[in-house]
Length: 73
Image (cartoon, rainbow, N blue to C red):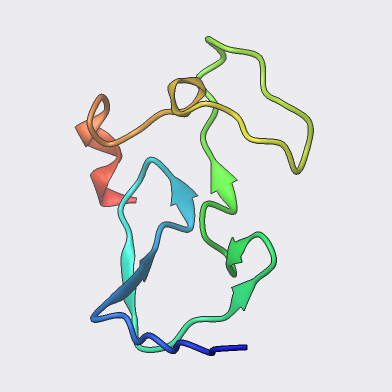
């Protein structure tokens, strides 16, 4: 078995889906991805949300590209 190691040049996460991200010096990679990445989201009530743990489309949430006034939060 061959093992390959890689080191990313930069790591970032977006704790609130659709809002600004943050650069990380280190991160914890879990089975479902980076810990706390897209942990929260601000639903806009246009599309029903999926059950917890399921993927819900980007269009179901407020985001900076459509709501720049959210940038200060």
